[in-house]
Each structure stands twice: as structure tokens, then as C-alpha cells.
Length: 415
Picture 1 (cartoon, helix red, strand yellow):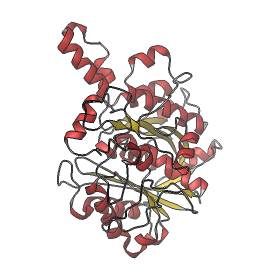
Picture 2 (cartoon, rainbow, N blue to C red; picture 1 turned 120 degrees about the vertical axis):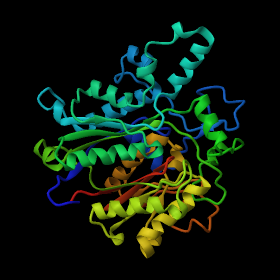
Picture 3 (cartoon, rainbow, N blue to C red; picture 1 turned 45 degrees about the vertical axis):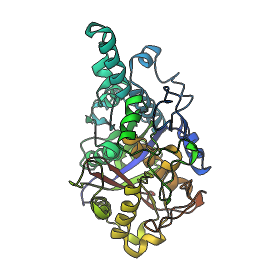
Picture 4 (cartoon, rainbow, N blue to C red; picture 1 turned 180 degrees about the vertical axis):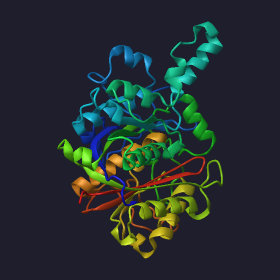
């Protein structure tokens, strides 16, 4: 951290995930190795090459959304707004006219309103232009989770939406962190939301050979760092945090969950989907996060890996970690919570940041489930299959996305 910048703390958490629709349910699922992957129910996937996903289940918007809103909003926006409301409630922060301009929102999304786009494209083709919904554009555009959350919360401060693919949620948190460090706001509601389990979303990723095709055993399909991995499992949901300057949080007597201390972000400038050789771009992001937080390798107690379960990511991420952390890498517990939640694309960084904060608070590291056959190219401690009690003071969270986007966030216990 640069001298003179404000310290930034986490005071609120919200999560809508395939393994739980509250922060408590999500954490219980993580530490009990709950698997959120099953056959797709959101549409008829019988003709698809991949027929399973990690869906959000039994979400009741009552108390969060009005019936009219629930009908008009795209699924990703619903997830983002509900998670934002959860996080704000957890923080105890009251947004009023006198402070609204000092509180902002940044919710990233890799794809945005894909379901709306697909649905209305069919309407256009089948029924003509006059039948396309007037809500099509505001439902579809990827900034709408941010916009609707800001409206719902009354937050009038810095507002934007990051669209850096699978790094979007982490970029949103990092960008909010920077705004607060610089004193441009007192609090930020930030994270990621995604809902791309649609016919086009699944077919597109399947055609790119990015997904697992383990249709005979979906529950074991997301298997990061395992030698038998064959692709990621698409998931959906949202993770949102409330960040505040330490001064602001302390002045109002807020409960502080953790501190954000580092943010590194880079671009591979290499390939539209594949990481740079040896994970060089990811390594640089990790290095920058350490540098930003004034951290040495020996201070890192846990890494929440990007860990997608794709052949390319997991070996390259392992290389990136070893490049930056050297001999210390083999002593650090590393896990991929995507083994349980699937890959939420732009929402993944949000729920994984929530997992990191909860790990710091509870002294338990979530596992990497479905890990049974070690890959020689992935030779670190991936906390296989069962959660581990382990006190942590400083944690890293990695997120990498198509287009070569790389993010690393650093969190620590309050000191």
C-alpha cells in the first residue's frame, strides 16, 4: 500500500450461489464439500453436448424484489441486486440523502443479460420487430446489475460496471478498493453477477471445448488440478461486498470482517482464450498484489485459486504461483471453490472474495472436491476433498479471464 492512502475494510457480505442463497448457507456448503452441479433444469438441454451446470436453486426474491421487478429484470441483475441488498444489510450501513453521493456501486459481469438477448432474438425472428420488449436493452446491457443496485440502494457515488470476462467480479472489487484508497468515496458496494446458463451460453462454451462433457457423472465434472479434468462447469449467481475506508467504518462503529490490502491486474496480450505460457500474466498480477500490500511470500497463508478445472488454466496457474512465491508455494494451502460452485464467470470473483473473508474469520479453508488423481504439472497442496482447520492472516484470490485479463486480490485479518 502506498503511504497516505486510506485503509480499506470489508463490512458487508452477500452471496447467491449454486450451494446456498445466503452467506451462511454458502459457507456451510463450502466447508461441508457440498456439490452444486447437476443436470440443467433451466432449459431443455437434451440436444446439447454438455447437459449439466451449477444452477442457483430455490431462490425466493420475496423481501428483496417487487413482483414487477422480478418479471422485468434479467436473471443476472436479480442475483446482483439481491446479493447487494444482503451485503448492505450485513454492513449495517444506512444510505441517506446526506451520504448517498459518497457511496458507490461496481458490479462486474462477463456476459450480462444473455437470457434476455436470446429470448428477444427469438421474438424478433418469430413474431417481428414490433413484438420485441421495450425492456430488452435495459435488461440486456451488462451494467444493469450495477444500475439497478444503485437505484435500489440509493447509492449516488462512483458507479461503473466491469466486463473483463471471468475476472470481472475481482476487477470490480479491486477498482472499488482503489476508489476508496484515494478518498473518492466512503463506501463501495462491489462484486460480480452472472446468469449465463442459457442455450446459447452453454452451446457457445461447449463449441469452444471449454466445458466438461462428463454427462454420465456431472457431480464429479468440476475437478480442478486433477489429472482427469476435462473442462469447467458453468455456474451462476452473485457475490457482493461492502467496502469502506477504515475511518468511515470505525466512525460508525461497524463490524469489520477483514481488510483489503492488495490489488494486482494485468493483461496477457497473448490469446483470446488461452493463458500466456507458464501463466506469466497471472504471475505478474500476483506479484503486483504482493507489492501493493507490502507482502512477502512467507506471509501468505492461503490462496483461493482461479482453478477452473480446464487443462490449460490449472497447470498455468500452478506455474504462476510457483514463479512468484518460490519455495513457499509448496507450503501454502490452495483450493478451488469452483469444484463445488462451478464457474460463475464474471460472478466468480465476487463469491470467491466472500469465501476468502469467511476463511479469515472462521479459520477453516474450503476444499477442492473431486480431487483423486494428482497431475504432475499441478504439484501443490490443493486441500483435497475435505475442509481444513487452518488459521489464516493473509489470503490471495486469483481470477483470470478470456481476453487475457488477470487479477489478484489480497485480504488480511484486521490488525
